[in-house]
Length: 137
Image (cartoon, rainbow, N blue to C red; front, top):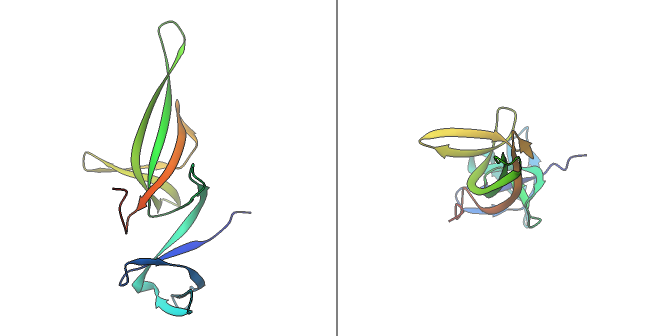
């Protein structure tokens, strides 16, 4: 069964807080250690995507990740050649699923978080920041 968990960015305090409870009906959460209430309009609630990065760190929407790819190309001699590259992307929930998001030439690009597409494979994902704090810089 998929583990479902969230993290909360407290907008005014500019920090993450450990969530104790989520009340979707009243649109608020309680955070540790004192059980203080925070309304949804004062936080950013981000869901765990169900994956860990190459260092074992949980990946959440809002994370900025370095995604390493490898792509197989056929050479003239019929041998496979592998091209490797990295992209800096962030994790978003859009179109009903978690996606990699990056901006290329002022255009939003979204790709499913799939292990393989076309001749291209994910070679590793590393969380390097999040959209609230250091932004991966």
